[in-house]
Image 1 (cartoon, rainbow, N blue to C red):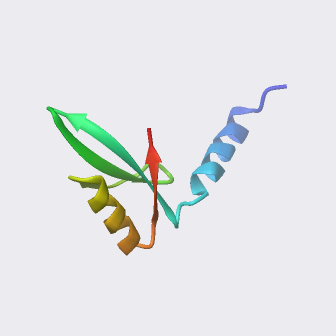
Image 2: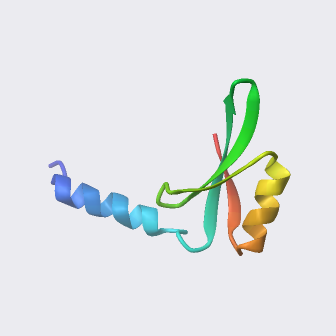
Length: 71
């Protein structure tokens, strides 16, 4: 028996809350031949954009966030 849409939405929302306060996800994005590293919150909110992964990691550490990679 499939889950009702409202229950699925609740489950997605609960999963997004996991790590919301202590994790950030960093993804490499290349546009126009330039790679930038974009940090997102656990809920998908774009937080910052950096020129290097090292800078992204350092900024996350300053904010007491654990940087996790997204592929």
